Amino acid sequence: MLPPVKKKIYVFSPSSAVRDKSVIRRGVQRLKALGHEVELDEAAFATRMRFAGDDEVRLAGIARATASGADVAITTRGGYGLTRLLPGIPYKQVAKAIDRGMVFVGLSDFTAFQNAVLAKTGAVTWAGPAVGEDFGVEGEPDDIMQACFEDLVSGQGEGTGWQLPRSEARAEPFEIQGLLWGGNLAMIASLVGTPWLPQARGGILFLEDIAEHPYRIERMLAQLLHAGVLARQKAILLGHFNNYKLYPHDRGYRFQTVVDWLRSQVKAPVFTGLPFGHVPTKVCLPVGEKVHLAVEGRDAFVLWGHRH
Image (cartoon, rainbow, N blue to C red; front, top):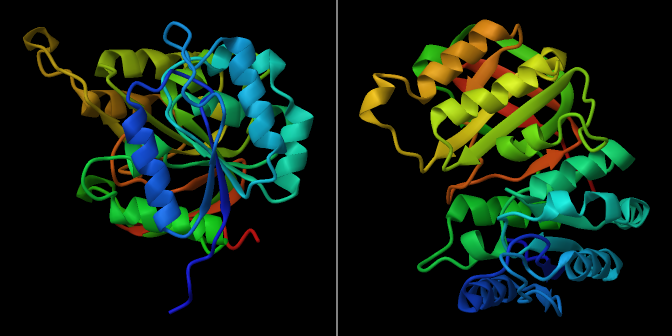
């Protein structure tokens, strides 16, 4: 067995304030236990209302992460706040850091940063874990999440796969190539009509969300549909949409209703079950990378090969 690859990891807070410092410290210790050198940004625990410091403090944290020379820059958590910062992000410096090998990792609110970087520079970032909700959990972190993260930081990751529901099984093999992009649905919808939404023509769009009732999910998808975004995609991959509550007056309206409606509105195939979202078991996905999507029977794969 090969020894673990030691990397420098920089932890920063570009969105909501950390609610429990012990969770982040536990996550940092777990990353160190994996053999990595971990640096916590000086403002990682800053607080200004619901934010991790005011806008200037959080922009300065992004700048420090970018200039840190770390192999990986990973967020403490998501929440809200990055859309406020998009005009001030140092995109050229971020792209240069990525060119030098830095990997930016996060999810949820970090979707805004990732897609803005893609739209402005074409650089690839990674949808993946956050220090708090993934490495800082009580008990042991999810094995698959941790293995995918280690594959990413060591440069060994080549793709991911999952099993589709029986209803989505393909009688004939299906294969396409396209630009993988997306992330949190609410954040993608919020970028419509702004300079920070990637054009991604012929793309493969992946989406997830948390605590959004299915009608809100449909409303955001409708926004992407009517804005012409969905018509430009070769495929749509749906991850986990969880932690919402249905009501008696929904009268059978549920998430599957939304999926069925979406399929009636787009020509591109819609596949569900992508192992990504606000769940313990999540893979790492390259936002802005050209990937190969293959489906055979119930087996689905997104492949990108070695990056470095």
